[in-house]
Image (tube, rainbow, N blue to C red; front, side, top):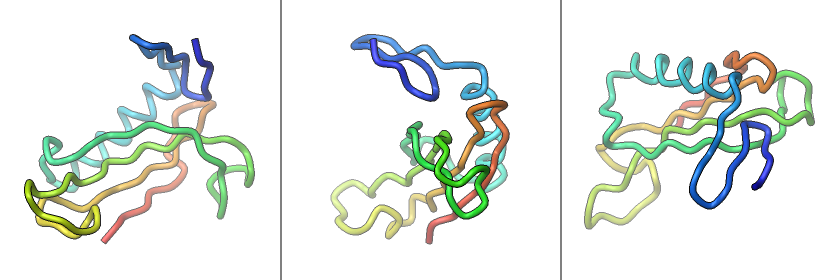
Length: 105
């Protein structure tokens, strides 16, 4: 089993801690405001370092990304399509609060 800032993971399961679940819920609620179809996105949860006022610089935080999928058969950059615009969230590992939101063009 692998221990991460957002929970535990092994070959066939992931156990998320409470702050991660709260953060995912908050990020998804904010994502819904963009009125984009969630079916056109991949959702990633990852560990990253805080920077630029996202809490304590250099401290581990949780990243949640809603990344637009490519249009089938089309090549290009991840956001160079009509399926949507990616949104990245920085989440506090202590309480699940959204610390920052980054929009991609």
